[in-house]
Amino acid sequence: MKKIEAIIKPFKLEEVKDALHDVGIEGMTVSEVKGFGRQKGHTEIYRGSEYTVDFLPKIKIELVVADNKVAAATQAVVKAAKTGKIGDGKIFVSNVEEAIRIRTEEKGEAAV
Image (cartoon, rainbow, N blue to C red; front, side):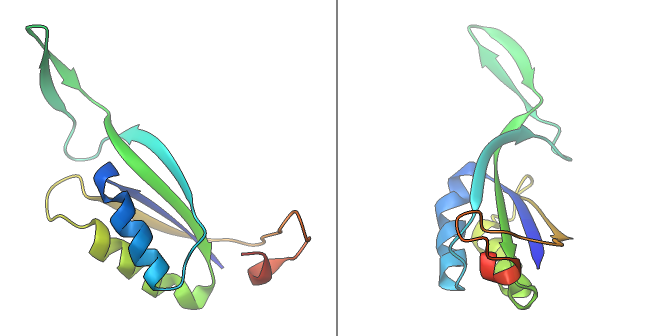
């Protein structure tokens, strides 16, 4: 099993969710996060004063999938989240040693 973490622009969440659903992935955890990468934030003007916004709002999607679904899931996220502009986000894939469904005590891929 693999854990996929995707950091995307907030307005792309629905498109990514739909794309994942289309490839058979329904369960995910979504968090509102802030961060920056190469874009290093931007400047804004508030009440006549200019200030720098270092951390930009992002959405973090976390899902655990079977090894054979990783390529389809990551490709779905890339296609749905890509705008071609700076700040589109990142995807991280890592190994998951065990998963346990609390309600039924199922383990492994059956728990996902």
